[in-house]
Amino acid sequence: MRKLFIKELLKSNKNKKNYLLINDLGYNVIEPFKKKYPDRIFNAGVSEQNMMGMAAGIASENCNVFVYSIANFSTFRCAEQIRNDVDYHKLPVTIVSVGSGVGYGNLGYTHHALQDYALMRSFPNMQILSPGNNNELIALLNYTQKNPQPSYLRLDKTEHKEVEFKKIPVSPGGIVKLIDGNKKKILLTTGSIQSLAKNIKLKKYKNYSLYSMPIWGMKAKNKAKNIIKKFDEIITIEDHFYDGGFGSWLKECINDTNIKTKIKSKYIRPEVINEVGSREYLLKKFGPK
Image 1 (cartoon, rainbow, N blue to C red):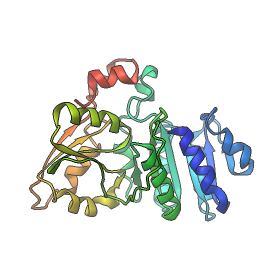
Image 2 (cartoon, rainbow, N blue to C red):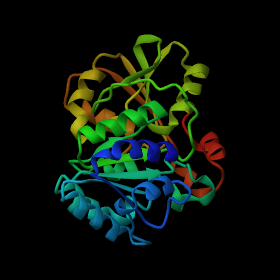
Image 3 (cartoon, rainbow, N blue to C red):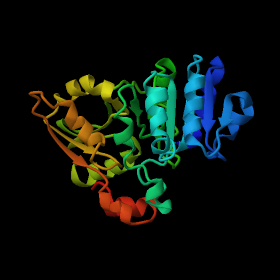
Image 4 (spheres, helix red, strand yellow):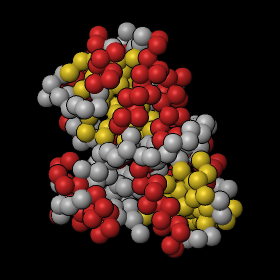
């Protein structure tokens, strides 16, 4: 998804308002942007707090800023600056993280993105953008251009192979149908775990429909609430810990309501932090089943 992100960002940069910031990472990916727009890309070096402060400053001048890094660096290392500089001032900064879940499995727990949803969704103005395929990513980038605001774009490390472009309507708390099935019982996923969710459906939940929710977060709760009540049962699937993740967020949406929808969750187990291995190995041993 990284290369597609840069490709689509180049397409949308005609308004001369898009800027890209990196922290000594992203090489062999960001070069096309640097070559075409050398005055709109900055390398902040190994200084994520400064990088986020720079992003806020540029965004305050009526520009859209994309901050690109491995997930743990663009979130936890500069959480205070995200909170105070970006989210508090409602600035149009999109924090782009790469390596969702255990995408950087061989580098171990320090490079995993397993609590990033929990952190980012706690900011009141931050929306979560979590594409599960190329079409969703393109739709989300178009959405950010039309609706500039604090956003967290969580990308898969691997490149997806969809070649057919389909225009997908996306909105906060809205769902996208992936595979038809039971009208009242569904699997609901978000982000790069989508391909695994399809396998889980085929193996264990053949009669269920499969949907994705590409945009969610604090501001999306009301719409999500109206979606949830349409179903009798929802099983969420995510590449994140349960605490603070997508499944727990969905359950929070119907707290203090009379909605009777049964929500179950599948997620990555915390024991994953004790092992190092490929993404495939870690998901097979500790991931949703």
